Every structure is written in structure tokens, then in C-alpha cells.
Image (cartoon, rainbow, N blue to C red):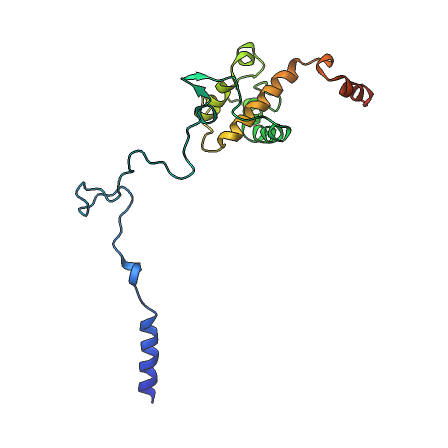
Length: 189
């Protein structure tokens, strides 16, 4: 009986040791092979195809430009929640260099790195919104691209928040609506 029991146990163990797809032929990405006639291990992307979810036909939304020129419009209506999201993204990605008020004196600058641009200069106040979107997307000077970190719609929200910062820098009490002005004047300083 011991030999039959040993045979059954050995059979069960061997049945659990199937290799099937574990030992299939495989190639490292971009490694050469003789399998295909062109010597590649991977097939090239078919011309004219776009991965699902990556069709970028709206040049304003995804490039901030029309015919190579920066646009001065937003590709979607900006709401209060968009501005809040823009402020959050700005505080995370932009404020370390540009500061929370956009004057270019962020904590990175205070630690000895190159000064970032101030959004309150005449040149940047007059710059179209597409300029800021392009800089966030592609980088400029010492600033790297944030395209891989910040989604396109969030880049537009950041641009909208930059505009808010620019307006707030030179705003007066006369710019506040009358009903809100009374609340501000009644509030403790």
C-alpha cells in the first residue's frame, strides 16, 4: 500500500507543476528578433490610429493655441469649483517656486534657487491665457514641463487661478460688488 500511496502523491505533485505559459517565448521591449521579417520583436503602431482616450482634436483645449498662436479664451466655462481646483493644483505644483501669491518668491527661491517669474509683471498680465497653458505643458527656461503630472483641464484651471491672482493684486474696494462690500467693511480686520 505504501507504494500506491507514494505514486498517488507523486502524481498529484507532478500535476501541479504545469509550465504551460510560464515557459513561453518572449522578448524584451524593442529587442531584435528573427521572428518578423523586419527584425523587430514588437509591431509598429498602425499609421492613423490613436489609443482610446487620447484623441486630441481640440487644439485650444490640448495645446492652448489656434494656428500656432496662443489663445486668450478658456476651452470650457470656469466655475467656482474650477477655481478652487485650480488653487489646489497651483498650491501643489506652482507655489513652491512662484509662491502662493504668484510673486515669484516661493520657498525654493528663498533657499537659493533661481527666482521664478512673477505673474504680476506687465508682460505676464497682458499675456494670453494660452501662454500660461503652453508654459505649464512644455516648460520654459528653468521651469520643467508639467504635462505628465497635471491633466490638461487642471492646467486650464491653474491658468484661471493665475488670472485671479493677477486681478487680486491690483483690485480695489470699488471692484467688489456693493452687496459684498458691505459685508467686507463690517467684518473685523
